[in-house]
Length: 173
Image (tube, rainbow, N blue to C red; front, top):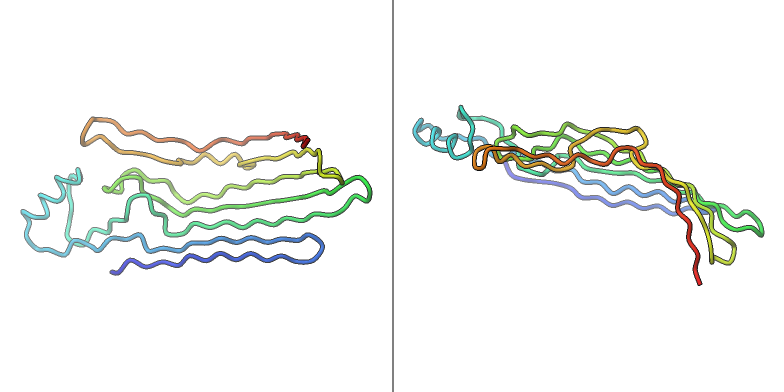
């Protein structure tokens, strides 16, 4: 099975400050199945990978490579007459199932993250403020992981940031 994939970046700018962004990636993370018939070789590969039992034809996937990863963002800005510019942005990013070790035992299922921002910038552009939220649906997900049980005896995971709300101010001088 050959490795294949598609990366696509689409950005559309419209009138009146409308903007759409859609970066996307589709990949085939599956490895070729083990198709050798020698039980000793199969046992050796299983031991090297730390898999208790490996059968010919087992469907393993590449480490750290989701099949699909994409995001979409929409922004809009409009003038507030002599006050300044108000900008709105919402974005959603999705990642399909991913394995964090070669044995395919440490896995994160597919998940999506929703972010948003509303910002104001003065007409002169010398000050502004915004309120924003990241991971607004408070999705719990594994951002990274390592399974070292076969070598040093433990596995680790790094969880993604929980819901975060913030306020930003800026002054240019």
